[in-house]
Image (cartoon, rainbow, N blue to C red; front, top):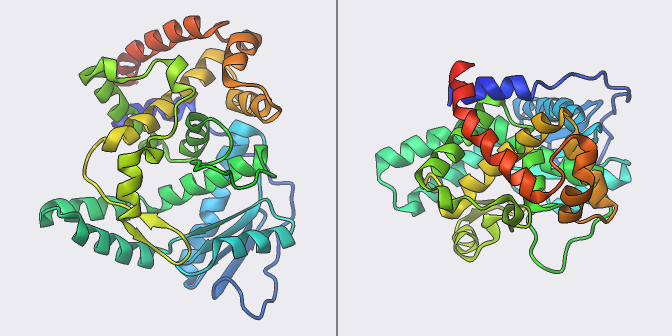
Length: 329
């Protein structure tokens, strides 16, 4: 996993861009979203504990740096760490301040409580439950960056999208692209772990990996019946955050989907030579192009194979070469 992390660090080296916007100031409110507010050029971060608010502000800054490197935007928003603050209230609050997004997420203390309850209900033995709980606790800041990434991506390309009539995972973008945008915001170590898990799954069961023509249209596995039912039976908060725990390394294909989304993004960046190629695709889709049309008609203009069949061949060869590249890194 470390080898893939080093390789990804080289491919996804995110440049830092100076922020042109002025820092916001925390508004005086009779009933603020939380006790502590930290204002920055990236927006407002709220939590009941100063340490948590500082962590939230840092996540906004780190995510904005990476997001600009790959998408050319720095969306500003409100991030509230709370188990009770209403998500719709947060959206209205952000709109009133002219900000681009709002996210309500769990503060670390509440996440630990929710995780403990979920672990007790999971039926796992104590040793496995402790390992899983420790792993989840260590990923809090990384998870926050991932979730902020989802919000920034939606704000950048579908700012006026209404809640869909049917269940939808994230933005109106294809699910792989929405997920790739969020995973790009994670640390290189986390990305390396996801890449390693995907390649291990591909080696163990090559036929279980969908070809690109299928994957590009694929619905997020979280929306599939078995995963959704488990999520609905999991723990939830007043603010709408749901939590499910499992030690299944690839719960109904979710882990594989994450890894393939990341690696497809990495492949497109390398093959095109453009660290913002996903921004090009996203802008076209936001203007009404279809995924298949872009890859069959526009991809060649960006140095990529000119149709999905040729793209599949290049993708499969790239995947075959990746383990050797990682080991030599």
